[in-house]
Length: 430
View 1 (spheres, rainbow, N blue to C red):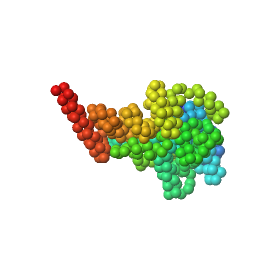
View 2: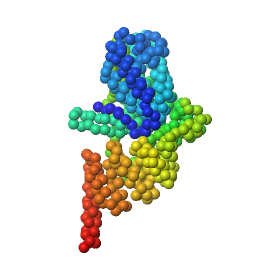
View 3: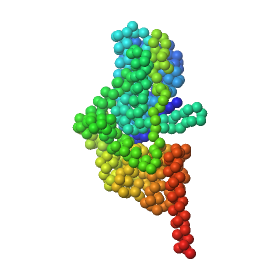
C-alpha cells in the first residue's frame, strides 16, 4: 500500500481552498447517505442527459468510505502542491474549471454517442487533472509516500512527480487497451489527465503561475510564457539536479526512491447499467506583485536564481538572509543539495557544514548521505574528529551495506584522529 502524505515543494500559500474542498466532499458524503445515493442520483453524472450542474456536483459525490478517503488523501497531496503556488482564490477557480471540464468531457460524449445508460461520480477525474498540472508545473519535486507491506515492512519514500504521473498514466492506459476503449474508470482517469494538461500550459503561457523557471518546459529548454522566460517552480532543484544529487552521494550511496506498485487509490466510480466498476495575475503587474512579497520569499527567489546561475557569493548571501528570516525549513532538500555541491565545487568546504547539517537533520533520502559528507568535512577540512564521530553515531537506521561500510571507515578514521589529538594534548601537558 502506498499513500501520499506530503511534498518537498515549499507551501507559500496555506491550503485553505484544498481543506475547504475536502470538507465539502466529506459533508456531502455524510448528508447524501454515505454512498447510498439513490435519492440523490440527480447529483451524479448521468449519461442520459446534459446537465452542467452535474458536472460540478458529481465530483463531490462518492460511492463508499474507501472511495472518499482515497480521493481525499490524493486531493490533499496535489492540492498542497498547486495551491501552494497559486493561493486559495486562483486554486479555487482552477479547481472549478477542471471540475466543469471533466464533467463535460465525461457526460457529453456518453449522451451524444451512446444509449445514455449509467453514470459516474467521484473526484478522481479532477485529481488526475491536478496530477497532470503538477507534472507540468513541478516535475522535479517529490511526493512523500507512506508504504506498508504486511505489519513488518513499512516506512516512507520520496518519488518525483514525473515518475508518479508516468506510472499512473501507464497503468490507466494499459487497462484501457486491455479492456477496450469504452467509458470506464480508467478512461475517466485518462480524460481527467487530458484536461489538466491544457489548463496547466495555458496558465504558464499567460504567466498566471510562478514556477521559477523549473516547470517541465523550462527544464526541457522550451519557452513557456509570453516573454519566453519560462515560469518558475518554487522548491525544485537547481540546474542539472541529477548531477547535484550524484555529487552529494560521492563516496556514499543515496537512498533513491522507487515508483509505487499499487493502483491509484482514488478511483472514480463509473456506474454502468446500475453497477459500479470501482468504488490571475496580469503580466503587466508582475513587478508590483513581487514587490509585495515578504522578505523570506524574496530571499528564496534570490537563492534559487543564484543556484541556477552558479553564483556562489550571491547564493551564500541569500542563504544567510533565509536564515535571518527563519525560512530554511521552506527550502526543499534538492536546493540544499545543490547549494552544498556549489560550495564544494568552489572549495568552500567549511561553509558546506550548515546546509549539510540541515539535510542531515531532515527525515529524507538525503539524510544519511549528508551525514557522511558532513563527517568528511569535519575530518578533512575542520580537523574536528569528535564532531565527525558524533554525526556518524547519530545516523538514521537502517543503513544499506555500502553506507554502513563507508560509515564504519569514517568512524575508524575519526577515532584514530581523536586518539592522536588526545595523545598530543597529553604530551603537551607532560
